[in-house]
Structure formats: C-alpha cells, structure tokens
Length: 144
Image (tube, rainbow, N blue to C red):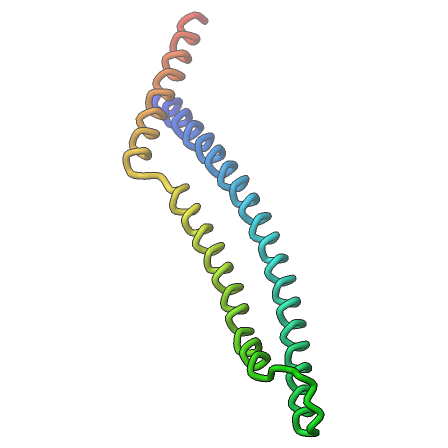
C-alpha cells in the first residue's frame, strides 16, 4: 500500500509539473513571438533613423559648403544642427522601448510565480487526490 501511495503521489506531482510546464511554455512562446515582432519593429525604426540621420548629415554638409562658397541657399544651418543633435534622442527612445519590453517580460515572470500559500494549497489538493485514488484502488481490490 505504501508503494502504491508513493507511486500515486509521484504521478500526481508529475502531472502537475507537466501542466505547469505546458502553460509556461505556451506563455513563453507568446512572449517570444511578441518580442520578436517588437524587435523587428525596432530594427526597422533603427534603419529608418539611420537613413534619416545620414540624409541630415549630407544636407548639413552641403549647406556648409554652400555657405563657404557664398551661394546662400537660404538653408537655416542652426535648425539643421539642432535636428542633428536630436538624432541621439530618437535612439534613446528606441532604447526606452526595449527597456519597457524587458520590464514587461520580467513582470510576467514575476506574476507567473506562485506564492507560498498557493504552493501549500496545491500540495494539500494533491494529497487529497492521492488519498481519493488510493481509496478507489482499495475498493477495487476488495471487490476482486
């Protein structure tokens, strides 16, 4: 009877672990898919920002040359310099989005964790199930 009890306890424990791991895997897949999508968006945004920055640098250099040559194209060099200085801010915003995504992932991991009370309650439920199955086996053996 003791061996049967141990086997049933082990079975219940393993079934519970399977359920928990299956749920964790499903949640991880969802988070991974969402993060990959966000990463793709961030990469696209980064490429666009780099292209925009390159265009601004080219325009700035062109304006400087025109000013040196005295052609005066009417380009506001101070405004262009300000836009170039804002470029790092755009990259800072991308970094903030990554940090937010990382914080969300950490929060999900923390929320998925069980409290000590939940663990104790689950253990009590498992013991009750084992006892029920053991009683059912006893009844079955007594009938045979």
